Image (cartoon, rainbow over all chains, first blue to last red; front, top):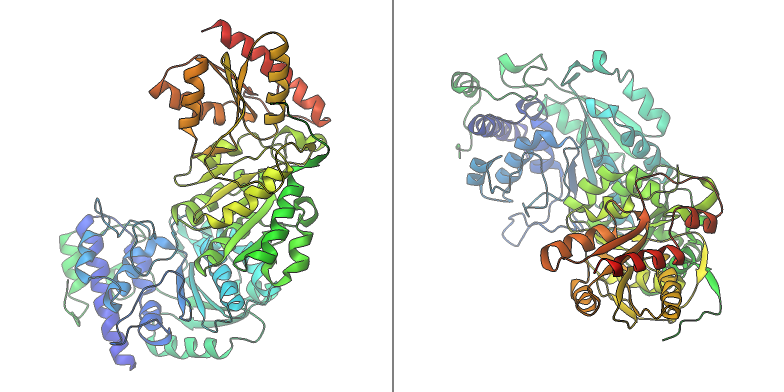
Length: 285
Length: 316
């Protein structure tokens, strides 16, 4: 897909994120906006997804012979919900139910409510990379050559389980896995450097045996090029980690550059100000 | 019916035998272990199916997550370690990635309870049944001997959903039939009686049989059931027995809080209030010692079941 088309979709997804969070006055807009470009790129360009004869995406829990994405930092749920809906997994109108009673769009994603596109619950941090590794190994056992993708947060790197998984994947040569870390430098209590310094994640993952790439996660051309490069490095005996620098709140000027918008919903005026900065490219739900 | 045995074996070896069977008979079963292959008796499975075994190292949280991921891919993962590390240590991983996510993962743990012996309370988890049964949708099974553990290990592969299978380290009498059919949630009626119901699980089932023999010498007829599945509980079998005896003793190698007895009491309070006594650990940690000595000190043997039976009969 052309870069401009992806950018147009990303603009609509950012609108969806803001409108979901505004409607229920809860949720996490900051990280959702920051990771929008990556998820749009993966779901609309790089990932090989199962489709029916008409080209419409079809959801199978096993994800056999298709690429699979796991969101480990589940609090950016408005992003994955928008991307899945816009990609055709469920009706876009369902975004109206985000975080409401009896909704399939829970505060954090879960397969418990049978929402198409979600294979694992996430929200309690640090678990997604392990799950991604398990599915990658299942694919290898089944001689399935498709790829597993996983996104984590940088604050999430505080969790010990992440490093158990980081040690395991190279040891078992899980080389059909591309993981991303959203390095926005922010977590709830402030900058990651102050709350719990991750220091040099590139050096750490390299020392654990990963191939490591870097990219600006808010530059669609660079995201496309880096994901393509990461795919070219598959099947070489090592898992691949992409350290993705993003701006929390990317796309909305007053939400960028601070952790203030990690888990705060915009009010009516703030929503209007934010939407004025984002083109309605696919039609609001 | 008189129960006898020819050999004593550890229930974990029953698990190993079940896994060896599955290695040859169910290509979807995969096994994971956190650096305890010998303790879990997985050598047979690994020898037959090395590609379907995943060594995780001493990293149980990661093991649970990887199991959930393998389950997404259509496999039936058996995640194995000691009960303390496979439940309490990784509760949130089981809760979110397995139970809430509805993944077909079998958490299979050895060295449950006091009978792991000399290693002491750090390893003697007595809360695992409670932890696991509280999770919505989790099946909890605690078989009583080698043959039953083997049968349960094989049977849970055919059940689609998360299961906690609990077994142990010491050798105990093998008194149930070889190649028995294991039905999840179906209690087994062992001894017919009308004076007191004894509901036992795991290693306490043999003790319950011994207790029934002692009681019979006193002229008391105990109705003894093997409750190998704590969740879902076979409430029909329990009601049938209680309707004959009108009193019950539960027996388990677990805390009284949160165990089998707790499930039975909750069911009876709602459906048929019944005098009940509990054989279990009473809100304390264990300690180092020989298994039999520990079971005696903490009141988890036939003598304790007899004592509680006399007490509950007097309360009728």
